Image 1 (cartoon, rainbow, N blue to C red):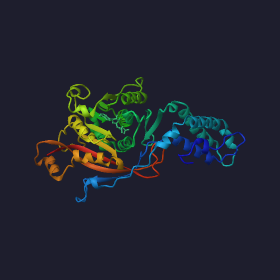
Image 2 (cartoon, protein in one colour):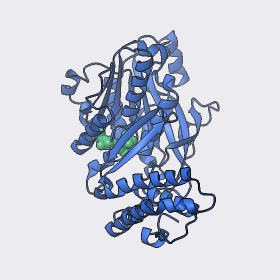
Image 3 (cartoon, protein in one colour):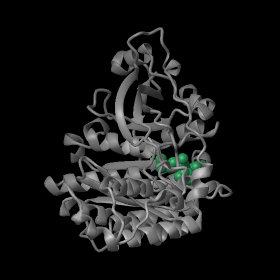
Image 4 (tube, protein in one colour):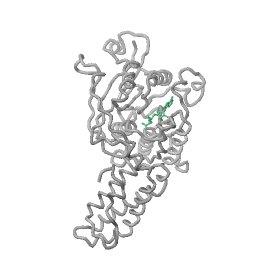
Length: 409
Ligand SMILES: C[S@@+](CC[C@H](N)C(=O)[O-])C[C@H]1O[C@@H](n2cnc3c(N)ncnc32)[C@H](O)[C@@H]1O
């Protein structure tokens, strides 16, 4: 069964007198899940390689390999939006749930196996018959073997509405979330750094996955070992995106839950205006600098890198001392799309790499002016799992992770 085929063409007939191979039914459920409840592309990190500082000084970070963009998703979007096919899938799943118990009559089919197939089918039924039929998709994201769970709603991607890029969760958010969940210490979210009030900002948060993962992680830590106040400020620009972001925050942290020292909230922040207007800087929550700034997939227009640099210059805290264990940093993850190579290239022009001279200076040998520099660049390669929104034909997907911090020059 491939994703470009119609449910009416590929789903096996369901009926009380039919004989089924359990594997065929399991394959049919996998096909329906990929069609109506797709994963986010590139969310499974395969390996990570440091590109900067490079050991071979003749190789510049911009010469690292890039992955090609996978094929267009248009046909699959059209198939997913087909009401007739969706209602056929709903009827098929309903019939499956009512007949599945008869499967236990077959050889080698355990009741547990049947139970698990029925559970999968019921979950899909809820998705196909419920909100997903309006184009709204709810997804569960899990990290650290299920210890961190976030449920997100994506709203329909309307290509005529520019704001809609933030209505979906993108692969960059999954990659950054996975890195934070796996190595919180790299982001200053573990150990001694937690003993102070911690302020975290996300730029272009979209559906809010990264901020929500940070909030869940810190709340879990606070539960084990009380920490000082931590404020997570998830920001975006477009009203429809901010509305969905607020909904996702409420859904994951219902106000009825006991309050803790870890707070998360959604706020308006426009990169293009922020640096030129002093209004927002005077008002909470932007009137104090942040220890950590996060951004996933937020550089896709030529001017974005410069706007974002100006925001980070105003909002990232200066290091208290050059040798602090995890200095304030801006972590930026972007996919390396062949179609956006020019826009991605702007990052390394706008934020120069920390050269050896600046590094000497930051260790106390001189220099008077703080400048934002790329202190590290990693390449992250992910499984390009095939799915409806981003069919990748099994290609790997590459992301760049920039760590940007203050250097005295
Ligand atoms: C490609 S989406 C990425 C969303 C999210 N970080 C993720 O990875 O799922 C880019 C995000 O940047 C936001 N954005 C675009 N222009 C912006 C601006 N001028 N100021 C603030 N946010 C902006 C969009 O609304 C959208 O949420």
